[in-house]
Image (cartoon, rainbow, N blue to C red; front, side):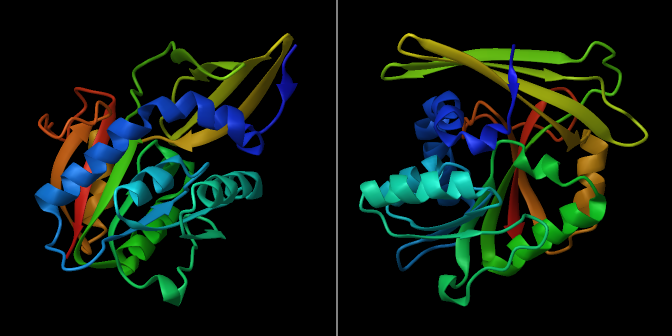
Length: 263
């Protein structure tokens, strides 16, 4: 039997199953900035909304960036603070929400912001989505970049989706199974559950989290961008995070990464 528990309340297990992608994602973000970002005469600044366990904050700090981030979950923030402190990395971290965050004045304007792993889809209304992106635009220098990853939903799929993968760290092994139910087309919602099976030495347990995402197809992404004159769309990629592989904004693939520039 699986225990009902928010996986953000167990940041170590969450971190283990996502951390393998960190080096590739960090290299991709830096390559995007080198290709599309404004010229810099100082140490660049980065903002990560929904920064989670802090894995990318640490990776980007090690690449020379001044990093700031926020998250809504106090357990995630505590984990991120401990990780950065252990690595002797300075960062601004605070608890806040995507649709209503207030950046501290001491942060100044940033050169790059990103939300890479579909956390943006937690915003269940168009108003909240626009509020989030406008606040990010206000935090960016003119010419600064926002990199936004969104899993596109197929509203013709009547079977849903299942994704499974596993990862280990030391004696801990975590297996993740995420099930996405068929999209509710009119309400633009999809029900999702993630079950983590954890083995820590000889001990095992399972925990399950249920939540909802807002759905997007390519046309709905374009509609959202039309409501945000603060940004221009520069390029699209997919979740392979290959700087050389640009894509079109269409429904031919499920995972899209938008590269937006602050006007």
